[in-house]
Image (cartoon, rainbow, N blue to C red; front, side, top):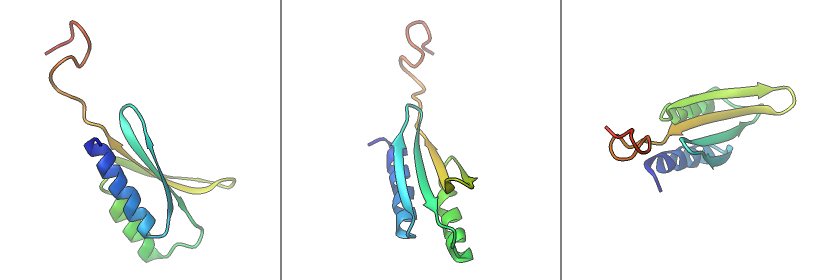
Length: 92
């Protein structure tokens, strides 16, 4: 598993340990972790959640009246700096 997958899995595990329902999705350039945030979350839990997602490259909260609140965190996959990164003719 790539390092981004390990980091994302660790974030998901820590969020799950806080009682949140999480899911992890692999994308070509990043790994996405999402967690459903219930209506009744204590201030202490919010602090712990923010400590967890601070380890991601980006994070945010999507809140709608229809779907509730979904926390998301993105861990970027590393891009090789040498080799055939850009295809033929784009090597450094």
